[in-house]
Image (cartoon, rainbow, N blue to C red; front, side, top):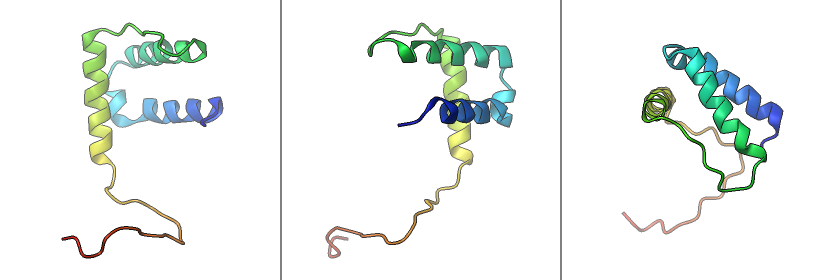
Length: 87
């Protein structure tokens, strides 16, 4: 489980990303506040975001993921399971 300090650091990293900086930082801050306010609420609590906010977050998130390498950094030992005869 991610603790609050790790979550805050992750959100800060996203906020400082060049892609998110192109969005209005006040908008990003407001969206982050809306999403983190419900963390202490019961599961299923709804968060109201405008269509514009969602589109901005989706576009920024997509760009961030596309810029990430397709390489997984794994540590040994690794066990690979499966059928080696399937092509």
